[in-house]
Length: 102
Image (tube, rainbow, N blue to C red; front, side):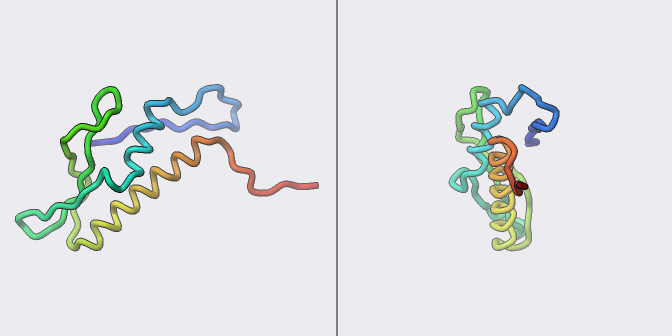
């Protein structure tokens, strides 16, 4: 499964923001309970994530995302994906002031 998302820049005064459906899917993928690790017959570990239906509701099917040699690296891959989606959610809140001048 390929996840698609579109980014927006507030620098160009775009009135368009992140859609509610996109935000809901990012929140879903940022929750670790929606992920699992399975062992394959060849000994590798596969990370999988639950699917969402067209309305954005979770369904009981899983999509393979990555394969890793160890359980630790598989869990690290999941943690990296969760971090990625959390960053997207933070970005969707708008620009973050990092420094002000007087």
